[in-house]
Figure (cartoon, rainbow, N blue to C red):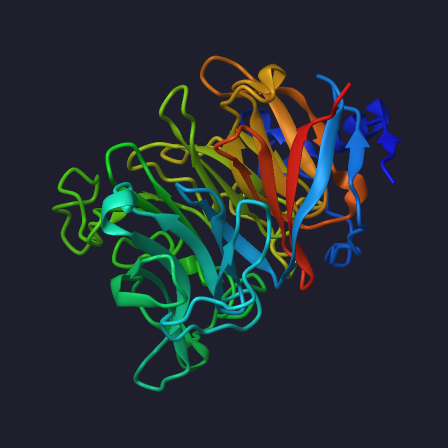
Length: 421
């Protein structure tokens, strides 16, 4: 049954209390002690739908397009309709234009390390996919030597529309290998080595492939230039480093790096109106961030954060540190756990043109009005929170509708369009 739900203004006011405009953040000495962290938000069973909800620009219609996915992580729209969808346990699925899930996963994927939040992450099509049929996958790769170590990898393959990949090859492997056998003494109560891989992929308009690489819960490594931990990378389509990357030519530095100082970056998009690169990342207890990514920028992790370390140890600094770029927005505690982001560009929702859309695990889908530079304005409108889902990904489809993935073991694809009438 379709039901109408009004988004209460009280929700937005309550949410605004945990959102900080990062440049106006207090100093480290003035931050109050956080309350104990709540249990992780695991989500609730998704109903049958469809649903109609009121929004600030008119009613929206929400339907379940596809069911039967397990922790879906990333999606790529196909030229002829439909999409490819990754499942974190290590499967690549075909979804038809009407939402029908092909029961047979695509074979031929590389060996994938799937434990905790590690596994198969994003999928993107080559800019020349119509001609070369190439796709790219980000995933957690086990060390082939047999050591209990892993690395973020990017694989390239040819997919002809059937149920098998061919010409599969790793074009990039994050350094160094890291896992149970290589864990040193670390500060701050950081988590296990099988966390914080990053893994979001994005092609820009010039054919460069951006890759987000997490800190592997070893934040002390991020400030060093000789590794890929906690960095956003910029590659050529063959995995090589473009000659104009900011760290090319620095002795001992990794030439693939575009920016550094990130914890676990899981959202990445280009604003189609300005060409700017934007990113979201998980902080520790609080300190989730929205960043506009600058070439060669240092975003501070792990010495600068608006979150709290898990063992209660205070951060070295909160904001306004010379040489470090503060986030555009920061949240928590409690954390909202940001997923992917998108700027709306389409005709289906004319009232949303240029708006920033942020998928979250705990606060639904957030819609921000923006200025001409894409900077978010005021408090967000909270959408879809009543569905109780962990929203992993949000995309603007070729038809102008919104498509979202739920990060659940009984995962789904959700489609959002204007409601009739």
